[in-house]
Length: 378
Image (cartoon, rainbow, N blue to C red; front, side, top):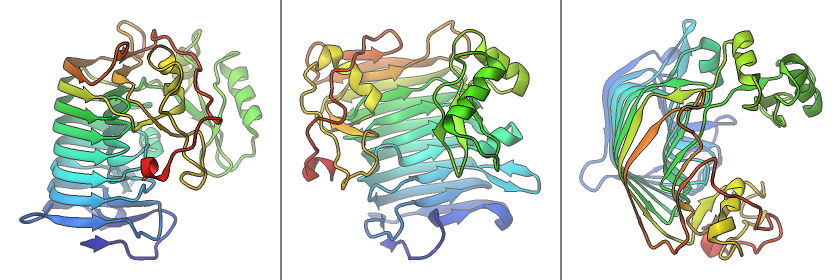
């Protein structure tokens, strides 16, 4: 069993390879023999802990172990980038398989891919959070105008009482194709979640803006209504998402060369969604209960002792099979094709696919509902 030692900075990692001045790491594996080994984060001194920080690595394999998480504020595998010699590098040619993680935080989980080429993910499970999170969100990649993921293959990706076993989130990044065979959601919010790409503009580092001042500057530059409400990102910095209205995205692209990200044509086969009552749910997803759970039954809000940032996450019944906000033929949208979706335990009416046309209305009192019992949160 591995435990996390005390010390380090604001963000810490148990193992890292191929980062910064370490240079490139090639031809290595971390494999549990027999019944495997355990990584235990339950007593980690820093909640901002990841297990593997992966950078410039080539020809690797991670296999056969268990991670006892404690709702740490990172995915355990950060399949990321490293900056060296005025360029960025990322993992290529690898396998991550036969790993079980327990007690993941709602927005994180087992794997997050920022940049990767030619990787196989196989036989992975996360209790809570997201098992395979293909969310290519990294500001350094934006600066270099490169990164993202290509030639990604996955088999048997499972989640229990989770947000979703598989998630696509391109942000601003152009990504290649992903092929997944076998997704199982046991009591999760949904089996597959596909977010649309988007563009965010950041206030200049070192300059002082208020939230409203940055919103006003974006609207003045690109047109009224182009800026969504900015949110805090980093120290004294604001991020404003560009609304997909009028020609706002086109204007931003012409001026900054930034445009919403996407995935090349991708396929997911053999998806199984099993209903449960302890799924992780985001606040905006609660509105889809308008037709399936209008009384907001069995939905609870974590207490401030359980999670200090109230409103970020809820626990409640599974929503449906797939959430996909992309529409065929719409500019900047892309296709994730779902082949063979099987749903069990859901009671009519239920959502097979949630998209931009799905009815939604506020039926849950976001902050006035019952608190989650420790047995549901833990």
